[in-house]
Image (cartoon, rainbow, N blue to C red; front, side, top):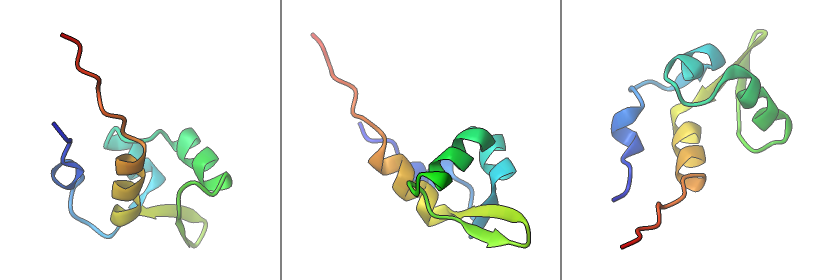
Length: 71
């Protein structure tokens, strides 16, 4: 079963790092590390960093591993 992140992430274009943390997706410190390593794209508005909904979806889909089924 594949997780449908489209339904889990609220509609919107850009989310601040605090918004992303409040959604329970990525903590602010981890998001800053991912940005520094250029693993996730961001938009800087003034002094604040924002991540687009599309980038969150891409990151989650690329980094979600399928659970192995053992019988």
